Length: 456
Image (cartoon, rainbow, N blue to C red; front, side, top):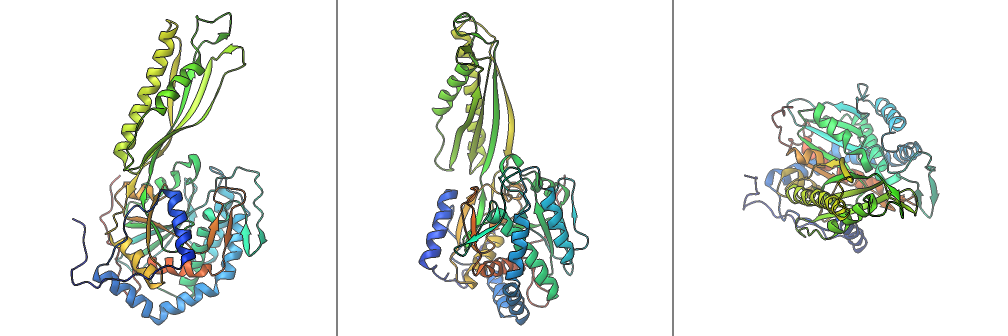
């Protein structure tokens, strides 16, 4: 049974957002499919107590001042890392630069693991939980993209500068201020710059992290998001590459003797287009790309398409996948029957597998983020998307994605930008969320529960 707040617990009145922030948050939520749950109206007493203690502690106020003071230096890290291209599967140069900064800021044992993730452990005082804090190294942009940072109208423009290089620079800032101010957390902080979040990276970096670290108790990931946003739902997805093969032939001379790979694919696409999916949990599909054939006067010997299937719940995703695969087989059978042959064949290859999951809104990690947001004057908006948090969510490990500060836009476009004015405020907010979860020696106890190590 999930733990719930006592009836005697104090209801937290979450401060209303200013209009501009509300508008930005609504836009982000709409892009991800809207609000997925109501935020906690109240939090359990121990959560309220922990954040009250943290915000009243002189050492924590000094730490937050240090985050503000480190802002300009952190922006230099942001620019430096942004200008090192990191296409999917080619993140090594950025990983090496991120590792060098981690070591320079005090994590001398940090390393690049076998998958390409940068991993460094900042140990707590002992017997506390282990919290993964992460941002992804890769961007969607191919090698050769101009990633030079350009400044105009108070904004920094460059592909990948907000998604997710800002998250990397915030992690480095946290590491610096925690070490400079000798803050001892009770729990361990596992700092990670991971690979494989974008495109067909297939969450390979995060899958490796959780395969190799069976004692992680929770995750807080950083992604571009308006202040107050807490992502707690992981949209699962399967992607297929589908290839149709036939003998081919002359469009006139071989007509009636051989099936067309493109016609077979067309039949499949028409059948797929007629599949119905539930609106809740939101479940979607699309044939995203098509190709094939050799010339206008050739019966196509080959055709190919890529299919994307997504859902906020794995059961309807798998049911939709089953219908789509059946539709493809039926289409091939119909194309062969049309010409009384059996020479058209099809093969399917799973090229994307992102497990889905959810962190319930009444879990302590969501309540912690909600309470921290309230301390900084922000109303919480609970959202969902496909992110690195999908992996721990699918394993039943509490995980959320929050913002690192700054206003952002143009994701996945060459015109991507970030306005880092007052971005330190978001970095403060998210750091306080993290500190409440792992606890601070002499100030607050950890809120995150220490779990038994998982088994492979």
